[in-house]
Image 1 (cartoon, rainbow, N blue to C red):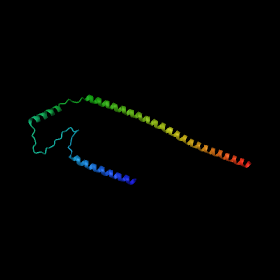
Image 2: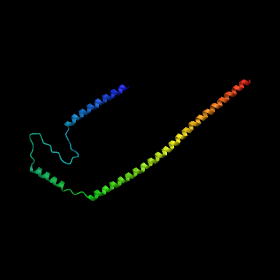
Image 3: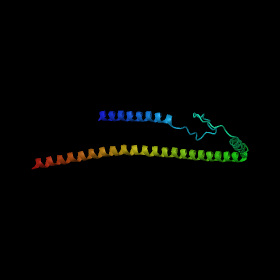
Image 4: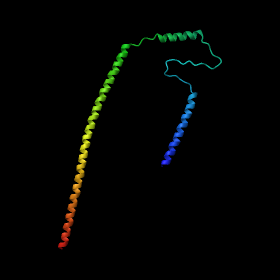
Length: 154
């Protein structure tokens, strides 16, 4: 049983390792796509026929960059109000968490009280069971004694 578990673990490790090696090899050939970058990546072209930018593309790029720089400023009062809302939400979450923790402490104390009562009752039950067994033994021994006396009388 242990040997089959060990063999399975070794085979699984080998398969996962080979998959990772293959994944790394394929990752080097994949194109890089900057999804979350703000700055565009400039890549040099390795082909022999490189195009020189024309005047129309330069003016289009300058118009786009001018439009990007003339974007309206962010309203700081809205940002501070949003921060205030977020802080109040965090405070509400903190207070809710404190209430729940207090409830947990209360439940734990109630549980420990009930657990202690259970242990006491369990011990009392055990003692009563012992007393019942001893009493039953006494009754049986008295019955046996009575039977012996009756036999002797006859």
